Image 1 (cartoon, rainbow, N blue to C red):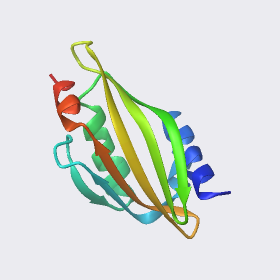
Image 2 (cartoon, helix red, strand yellow; image 1 turned 60 degrees about the horizontal axis):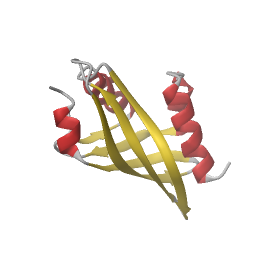
Image 3 (cartoon, helix red, strand yellow; image 1 turned 90 degrees about the vertical axis):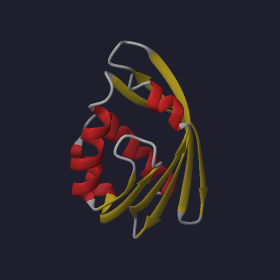
Image 4 (cartoon, helix red, strand yellow; image 1 turned 180 degrees about the vertical axis):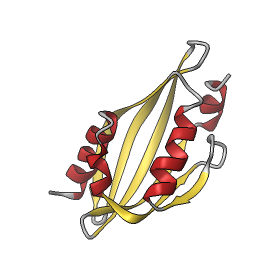
Length: 126
């Protein structure tokens, strides 16, 4: 499986809430999100990322999905361009473009880095 295929599989499984996505990640995964995101900053390890960061993020919104536009692969990195599709608790809809950068090591996702418009994300929390 190519690095891009690995990341695509991660999005597919994660989007279906299939815990098999955890097998695609390194035990010490480093998940770095924009500081102005809910619970933003750097999270390390599967437990911190998937049992700590994500539940706190999703608790802020009625819906939070990703729509992928493009994958680019360069050596150990996969760059993903897309849009967050967010529905606020007050039912307002927001779209926030993003870039995700994944680093693959030993056929596992070892690092994630996010770039997005945090103003849109913050407005969707209201």
